[in-house]
Image: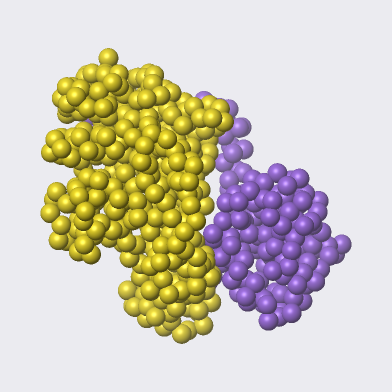
Length: 205
Length: 430
Ligand SMILES: [Zn+2]
C-alpha cells in the first residue's frame, strides 16, 4: 500500500496540510509532525488560536534592526537605542548569540548580527552576510573596540579572519574572546560562566 | 595490550554475541559467510573506528536490524581491553538512516547515512580519542588489491597505521578533510564565475583556507615522510624473510615536497623488526638513514606554499584543490621497479604482507607493545612454504592473534595450532 507523508487517504485534508507544514520545521520529522498535529487537534480552541496568533504576530511585527540586524519589534532595537551602552561592538553569527552574551553580564556595548558565517561548502560567502553593513557602521561610528564573537569552528574562524583583515587598516581595536570555549561548539550553547570568562579574557588579533 | 572480551549486537550475521578472548588469541574456523570474518572486522573497527573497506559501514549492520523494536537499523560492538595501566572498555555504535523509519532524535539522518558513535568507558568521545587505545594490524587476502589499486587505498592503509600511533595525525587528517571541502567549495565558485587568482576578492577569500590547508596538511606530509621511511626499512627485512634477498622498498611519493632529502630536517629514528618473542630494549635507536631525512615543519610549509602558488591557475580553472597529501601516493617497489604496475600477483601479495608485518614492527618500536594481529583467511592464497614463514613471523610477535580459516585443520600443524579453536556458523560461535 502506498501512503503519502501525511498519511494518505485516511487523513482529512486540513490535518494533512498541518502535518506537512510542521514537518518542514527544523528538527521535526513526519512522525513528530503527526504527533503534534493530533495534539493540536485535541487541544482547546484557545490554546490553538494563541499559537496561531503568536506565529502571525512574529511574522507581522518582528523585523531586523536597521543598525545591528538583530530581530526586533521596533527599529532601531532596544539595545541600539540604549544611551547607557558603551562604545564597543560585539559581532555575532546569530540573534540567539546575543541572548547568551547578555546573560553573562560581562558586555555593555552594542551588537552586530551577521546572520551566518563564511562557509563555501554551504554556498555562504561574505556577500551573503551583513559584512558590508558592519564595515560601513564601523567606519561611521568609530567604535572603541570590535569583538569578533564567532563560533570556534572553521566557518567561525574563517569569518573572524576575514573581518580582521578588512578592519586592520582602519585603526580599530579588534579582539576575539579568549579560548576556553568548547572548540567546534556554538556560542549559544556555551554556559554563561564560560562565556563570561572568555569574553573578559579577550585578546587582540 | 590485549582484548579480553568482545560483545556484538546486530553486527553482520550476529544478533548478539559475547566472546571471551584469551590473551594469546583464538582460531576461528567456518565456511565463507559463516561470520568468522565479522569477528576480526569488529575488532579492527574498535581499533581504528573505521570499517576496513571504504563505504561499507551500512553493511556492518545486520539485515533486518531494528525491525523488532520499530527503531532504525543499528549495530553495536564493544570490547574490554586490558593493559598495564588498567582496563578500559571501547565501543562503536552504528545507526542507519531510513526513509520510512524515522528517528526523532536525529531528524537530519537521511536514508543511507550511517551515524557512528565512539565510546570509551561508556562515554561518547571523538574518533581520535578512541583510536590508538587498541592497536591492531589486520591481514586479509583482499589486501593485495591495495598494491595495484588506486592511491586512495594505499593512503588509507598508511593513515590507519599512523593514526594508531599519533593522535595529532588523526586530528590533522580530519581537519584537513574539512578545510579541503571548504576550499574546494570556494574554488568551484571561482571556476564557475571565471574569477582570476589575482583579483582582490579571490585573494581575500582564499587566504584563510590556504593557511589552514598548509597548517593541517604539513603535519600529514611530515608524519608520512617519517613513518613511511621507517616502514620501508622494516618492510625490506620482512620481504627478504618471506621471499629471499630482493630489494623491497616503500616510498612516499608527494607532490608537496620535492627532493625531501635535500631540505633542512632531521633523520628519522632507525628501527628494526621484532626478531624474537621479546620487545627489544634497543628497538628504537638513534641513527641515520642517509637518503630518507625528514624535512622539518617549516621546510614542508614553505614547500607546500610554493606548490600552491605554482598550481594556482590550474586550481582556479578546474575548481578543485590539486596540491596536498590527498593527491599523494605510497609506492611499493622491488629492485626499484614499482610493484603496482609491474609486479606479479605473487610479488604484490608478498609486498603487502611485508608492509603489514612492518606496521606491526613499527608499533612495537614506537608504541612499545605488539598490536593485536588479525589474520583473516590469509593462508588460503599462499603456498605452504610462504604460509609457514608468515605464521612463524606472526608468532614471534608474541601478540594476541585472532586467526580465521575456512578449513579447521589448516592451522593445526603450525605454531599457532595451540590457540583455542571455535567454529563459526549460523550467527553463533562455539
Ligand atoms: Zn539594533
